[in-house]
Image (cartoon, rainbow, N blue to C red):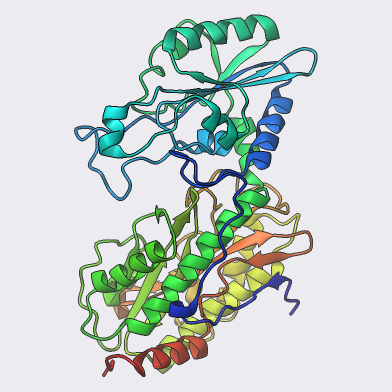
Length: 450
């Protein structure tokens, strides 16, 4: 079997594991959030403008949450993906204006709301127009957001370019005071989503750094969970270990609600109540993802609560694992996710033996093999498009047998390279031997699982 994917394993214990800080072109700026990859952002904006030629693109940031509109979960604010992709700015209610002119020149203007000292006393320092914002983003023209001036600037830009007006509409950004006004009013707005989504499907170096770090953090959370799980523990206690590790290692938030399903809950794909008390003999499926720099990992491991797989659990687990490894070994540019899905089902069925009766085990593989990964756990992209270097997706075969209270899923995050792929989440153990060994090591200085 050709092993095309680079699967470097990190065996350092959690307490000793320190991840290198990200590169920081600009740092320690008030209201800046994380450092911004200015060169990458400039290239993204230029590529988008090249796609449309002449025209005007208006991209709104996300609006603020209000207590009556939503219950705060985790962080109160998360930036709109498209706005963040083009600016790296985490300021609510901002706007980005991109203008493509007939002579091939580009104009870029960032509009930021005025800073509010009274609000900052409660909510922290914000990023307003001025030298700090220009230094952070690399956008020289940063203006105070005023709805009337912004509307006038858009109309003037349309006249200079002689092109069309584009935005992320009709996908509306909620809670933004301008979206329902002039941008949906007098102007005919064309969707920029096809061009933006096509760009986002292939990750640049800055995005890959964020995804790799998110995957490393998530892998360490899996290792931490494997060390502490024991019969009698509640699923939410294991969830707490996982999410503590996320935050301890620098994650911004969870990429999605953590799934920690044991016994009968292991057969429920999106179970996230996490309230059951785990028992000796259970398998527990941990489908988790840390978000770092607005990019999320998505990694699943299935482990025995007791620390050892039964013979049947091991046999079924090894079938799922061999299916995953066969698919990963087949990843290369030109393949499609649909082709990989067919390969997974064919391999599982052909290698079922008598594990699942005469109909084979593929009948219990009830979900898709893969989805795109990036700023969203189910990121933009078409399942029929050929793989290209820089694309990132999951590989997650599974088996779910409700009659046996037995679910198994193994999921990794895979980056397509020029000649194969790299498994970003390889630091999370996934062979039965490696899992059992880490779980055994974890009990040597902690409570017994028996």
